[in-house]
Length: 386
Image 1 (cartoon, rainbow, N blue to C red):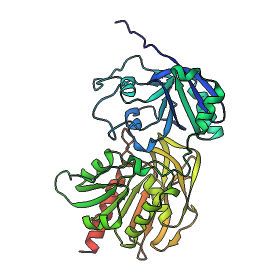
Image 2: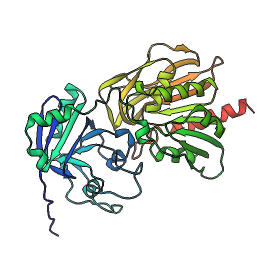
Image 3: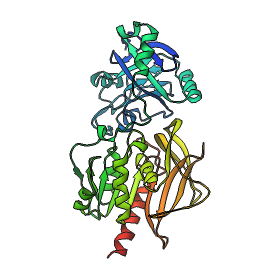
Image 4: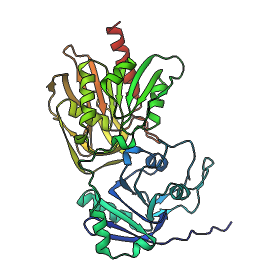
């Protein structure tokens, strides 16, 4: 069978520091700008592209060959693709998977995602590692023929990620419920800051009825549900700009409601406890990040997608108004805080969070036990208050 190669227009990728990479169009033609970040995952691109945490980011894939398994209607983590742009070295000529319903590029075109291919993604990744994540533009077709100086000006006119409040842009507009699978054991209020579909599904599989609520939810809204626990999801943006969400979380902690947070939720727990946050040089994005559980000494291979981190001491516990806080997990690559836990004066766990993704679609699944830990927390709190 003869494969017909797609017709591709000239394209150019321009970083805010002026470095330029010339390639060919991939996906839709046109112009896009965002923050350039790289992802080291070798699989799971459909879940990545539909993860709301990548809102306003241009993702560079370090794996050279992308698109092998095509695109299906089952693996989306939200209702749309959220990345601002997509950068690959060698697109697959055609998908090869029994689950594929169309090609990756077909979906990029259908959703208007501008990308670029046939560039040296290794060189681009090394540049981002050395210089740090920065703003970038992809220009294809007629846009690629504009003078370089004008393209750089368009890139630097885009807003920076630092200081950006983005949760409301990706959150659900209306509350909805994910029913418990089998017998309902608990009710949880999950604040959608950019939630992935697999997260409430993992909780539902453990007998939790999940009420997914908008980012603008107030503590009174949470109280009205009467939940056994509260969950804060992953999401995009700078945690230092999420004052509303932090204020709601402080009310949750003050009320003694069990809490679990993932990714952005971990950063917001850090802020609620009085810790600062900071922007990482180039962030953690991929499905191969080693994290140590400091309680057990176990090392987990985990899925990450974050450009900010919590600034909390690794060498000591911290007394807060909500109890004793400690760093529970740490990244073995760079000692970045990967988890927090809060215990009462009697030593009972009241809140915990992790910086990575235990729902881990499309893997790995080393950290799936954290949903069981949340169930244990809900169960112990229920017994104490029975």
